[in-house]
Length: 139
Image 1 (spheres, rainbow, N blue to C red):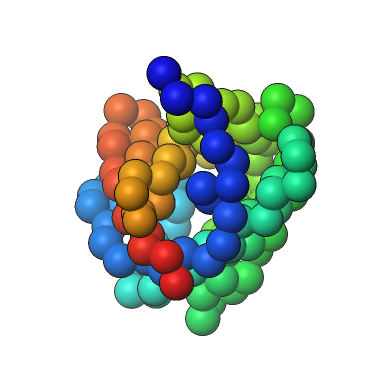
Image 2 (tube, one colour; image 1 turned 45 degrees about the vertical axis):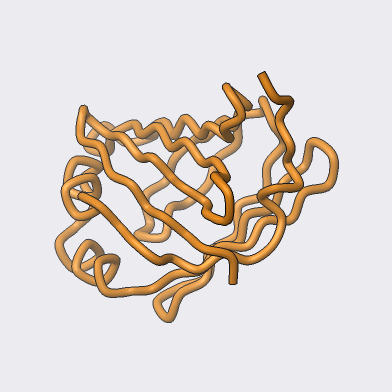
């Protein structure tokens, strides 16, 4: 098995395709207006890695959000649509895995797996048994 190479993530990525994203957002209890906006927005991601410390910047015409985290340490954050969550990132089988835990009873937990395959960044998302996929290409 190859060792995890965080540097593969570094740089800017542009959303190129999305599968079942609306159903995933609905399962995560994201409101109708935010889901509608999310379907039409072409977002970009940028990763900056310094040792164990990561910065992930998500940019769209709607909003820019930055997640800063250390692998293995839980932290609180707000999702693009305003839900308050707790996340922990880990490395598993060459994937950057994010376990997102709800802080309010009407929100839901999610699992996001990010990995680089050739020149694509792939994000597999799952909430309440509903799976989605987002594919980004290098910008």
